[in-house]
Length: 216
Image 1 (tube, rainbow, N blue to C red):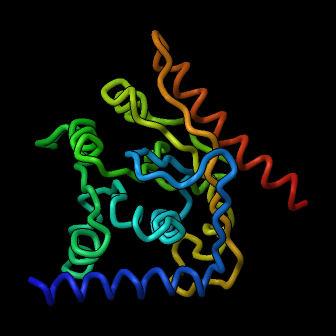
Image 2 (cartoon, rainbow, N blue to C red):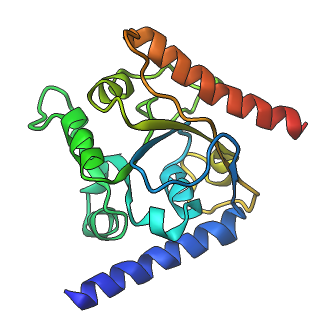
């Protein structure tokens, strides 16, 4: 057991180091500071490496307590993905097929937050390969906020990673990436689903817009 934990920790450090070297990633804490309290980091999604980038820029103590939410069908395809997903990232795997799922993904996420861990979540639900800055959000973020009204939801804008590793490519292109953490939000009393999702999406888009304006 100790050897397995050692190997998982060593693999995590290796992946983190590779992320830093390939992307030169930097973290911008603009709207909040790192916190050990359970949080939901919700981000734009353009690459399979998005959660790795967020995870790698968190302080080491928080990294160990932050679990990416990922599709079980993708991370259980082979033993390499199963090992990395379960042992290295401690990913929370959810069943994306609504018709055949046996567990409630919102309840899975609620249980993790109530146990004291944080989550990395991509509310677009899939990678954005369009020209739109951000796809519409799915409802899971709202339902999670209803069950965990005390938890902070932190918008996180990832810049450039989809250009470092475009869809269909296996060789990354060296390019500087940034991860910007915005001001946390919570569900307001009586706030409807559409209003909360619009507020969350607008907050995330604003982070991306401010980044673009500073780097024109």
